[in-house]
Image (cartoon, rainbow, N blue to C red; front, top):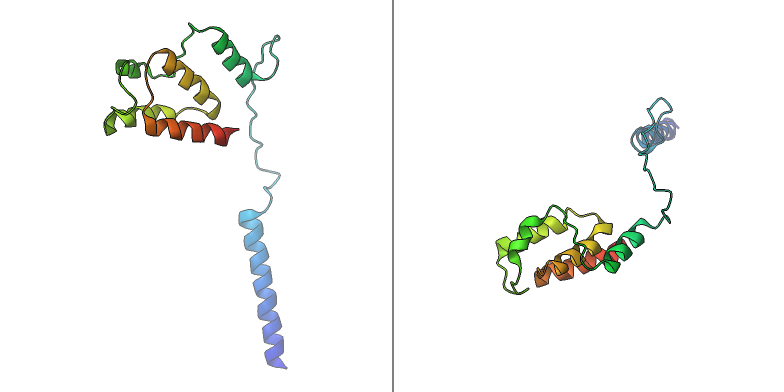
Amino acid sequence: MKIILLIFLAFGALIALGTWVSNKFFGRKKETDAPAEEEVVKIPTDCCGAHEVCEVEEMLQNPEQILYFEDEELDRFQGIAADAYNDAQIDEFRDVLYTLKNDEIKMWLISIERRQVQLPGILRQEAFMLLSEAS
């Protein structure tokens, strides 16, 4: 009888410990925690709300418009074929690609194309993969 009682007490202690650990690490935040400040975004009054679409469409309608994404140094690769880059040069492109937000990738691809810079072949595949993940 004592063994059964000890088993129930041990089992109860394990349940209590598990509940405490669960609440401590995975439970709700305490109400005393300060709420996170929400970022205020100012939207122009003439905005339709589809920023990504508007920006891309605006860029497509203005073929002379070139946006730079802190990647001016890539202009030195104008006229180089997509399969002619060495590993260090590919890494320069990769550094820019992976610092972009998902909604900037399409505009960056258009921008470097307008600057007559060919994206290395391997990164073209990575860029399209990132674009498809963002959709």
